[in-house]
Length: 322
Image 1 (cartoon, rainbow, N blue to C red):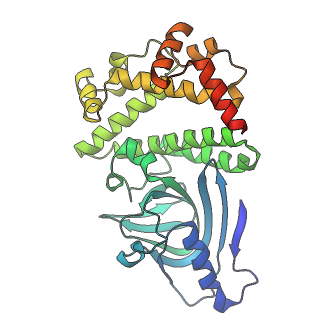
Image 2: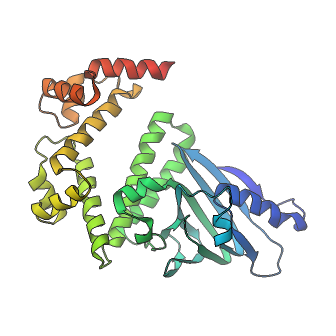
């Protein structure tokens, strides 16, 4: 990660103002105050991988809040949520009706549309990741359901998520754009899975329904290659009746089978457009996405995209080379 700001070598009277300008450019406008009279000391590092912005803050004794006034600022990012991972120390936070003390390994989501307060007492390091709002809400529902909920670092999916993100950051500058985008998508799936595991402890029905849908979609993604994947098997894997699962999918305007084929076709289209998959014969690509034959794949793909797989690949690769 590249150092974007450091108080080292900066006159004390300028430190906090410069920090605030860089910090708010990476996140959102905030009201910030120091918690003591000691000289302000902090650093900011950042990088971008696969379209996501990663920022590491190291600081001590600071309170930051979004308020009704800052939420109206022209630079406010309403289309993003922020994931906050505690790397060192602890962070007290409050949003909606939830208050928490996040410790090393914990993470939580901040909703940019409503006020929050975070407090760093003593020294702490935090990794912040800006995530497109729709990427989480399409799987988990409104951010109000999960923003401010602490995902404990001891949860299995949280441990896996942290390890994956750490590896992604260490390798980010060596990845091709296509690989980086693909790995970021995997990282976001892990974040969603971690939130779903944590939300499964809640008792509210809307949350339970969101968790079931997230599990169902995650199972579909993990088994797209299997031609035997069908609604009854999916219902068994998610632990609900087929009737209940179909009702949840229908509430979102889809039949389970339609969604499975929708994702298979999208996965195939993505691979056809990926230069890294150019060596893959169409038959292997079709089987890898769960189609029983190349002819079946070609027919359904053309119905969806208006072009056969071979023509689609040629057009996508030609556009990428322009």
